[in-house]
Length: 253
Image 1 (cartoon, rainbow, N blue to C red):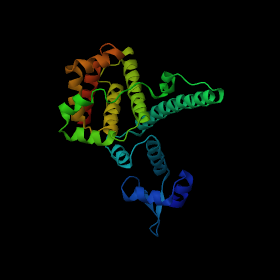
Image 2: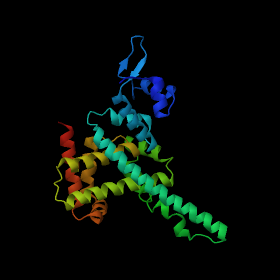
Image 3: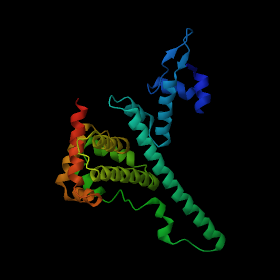
């Protein structure tokens, strides 16, 4: 079934101008045209638009969404699974923040104050600046570092909390595969490695499969990285390294 641009705008709750912009930048264009040359969107186009809107809701920029969805390796099912996990994490985070707001309001009404630790519990304890000086010393002159610095400059605590929630979920999913005896070169493990690569690509800097493989070597060479993964699951540093290398090989066809 074909839908006019006006129909799609009404269905999706966005403006016709937005759809025209998506078409102009090459993010999402109509699959068909009427005899008069008007845009006509198929049901499949609507599914693609839904994924674009999911990514936007999760904080992805239009250029990042375009790069992800136009990647030859893009898999719609895996993208939906990723979006589902990220939305679930976001919902959990929002619920914690709602609870904190309610407690604060309750304290104001009763004339009591929340404990300082409880005030910020919803934001987690992730400190993105912990290794900032060392990172700048080692990679400060690289394009990746400069791009990462540019992107993260505007990140707020809730952004870092969302990043941490994503990372924690990847860690849990990896540990579950290890517990199930799934080898590192299994497609499920490689899919998690790809998810992690795209996370770096989205949050920090463009991360190719080759660059991700370089990071994998560091995960074994630097004891601190190794210790981080070993805390999640014994043997995870090696497993994660092997999954990333396997994903690199898969990307080469």
